[in-house]
Image (cartoon, rainbow, N blue to C red):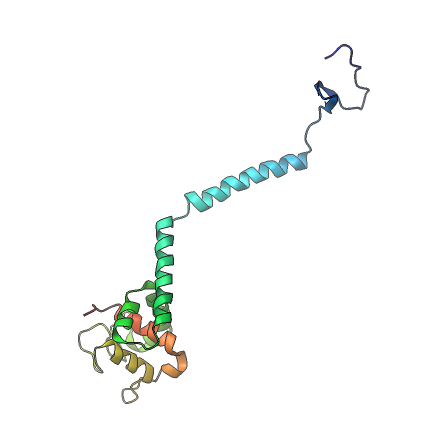
Length: 178
């Protein structure tokens, strides 16, 4: 300590030995709430980094591929004013359409055609024999308008064009394009 500097009175905080521009600092400890906020922020940052970068299974490449597939699906959907064979085959190769169609198929069609599309009450949808035509247009018509003589209802009024095209894309995804 500086011998010329007076000692602090009892109960008063000591002053640091250095002085800058005539300003002296108290030698106090930071408050506990401030230190806990600082250390909590550091711990949170480490845990957040580990959760988002280290333990996250998806990579930038997989997220990019999924986003490109979603953009491609929107392009196909917006350009498809009339669903033709080529558009339905494109939709059947896009995972966005196929996954949406799978969900609709599992909730409504699987009870008759089976979860694996192998048939049950209704015919198999994965074999080479198609009862009502094997082109995507024929499949779309069968799903949309139904086959009342065989007991299949018309799903077009129930689901609408978008869901019907997704179901057809899912069915066609299990077949090879010509």
